[in-house]
Picture 1: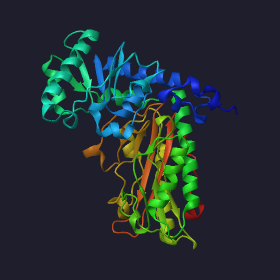
Picture 2: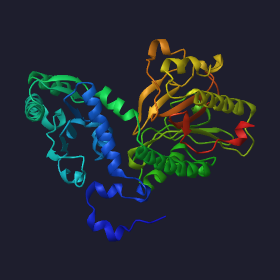
Picture 3: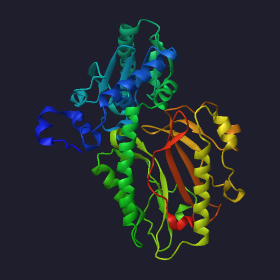
Picture 4: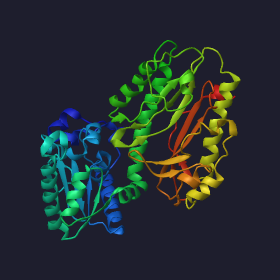
Length: 418
């Protein structure tokens, strides 16, 4: 495999462009990835009758342009960085001091300084700041698409949305066109997803090897995170690693709990990895040194059965309702602690669609069609209510023209399946 000469090329690269040139990028046409994603979003805007979108979610900005900047910071400071996109124009409003970070991206027509419309930035002058922000944005949108534009808006403070509407714009929610655009992956996107998964599998392998009685969950989780960062991944979106009694119920965040002999250790990766793509698979390990108990093996084999049954029924053209009807029946003793979803979409993060269990469908479910190009994560959590331990398993798949392709390749634990 050819290697990338950092020293020879460093002078030709600047800003965030450098971060996308790494060994895991070899063989991937990142320009084609960006072009496809931007085209997808514009097509969905057109089909939903939206003239412009203002994106503030950093994941969606990255989807639409490929650019990134302080992703976690931007998630909680939405008005500090945002993207205006129409059918023919893409303007990135970048955080103070960061205008250079979009250098080299063909998806950006112009970079402007963001006017941070937040109370933290404006203090008691927030109302005036929001009004000026909205006036400037309305003028820009009108310049590009004309008056009375329909504008898809993401998460910004309420004052901004109200002010925009007062300047003659019709405000709608941007979630639907963005999610529907992201749902179908291109072949080049799949290369990014696989690169992210391979890096995450290396990290999970290191985590598995590091499991030692006496270490804390935090120490073990840090092994995963260190490897992800070393391989140019972004961050772990959650802290879902727990051991022993803290595996039941699920969703107990990694803590200073000490891992003991012969316990189960359960992990959900939730890694925003290489190229910003989500690596989302779950595994449960046995600490040893003794063999797993019958109860531990029952939990594991039950979760394994659920995941593989539900993967086997997924095919293009199947409706979400049909999937719920055909999905694996959760035994009564495990039902109360079931995972909240049967499966979900997965791209640059967890995304549309959500596929619900049969019992939850009447209240939470919605219909749709499983389509080729969707990447899905099939979930299982098995643990009795008030039980001692639980097992979390999950696989990531691609829906093809004829069925599915398994994406996550990390092995299961043979000693828990016998």
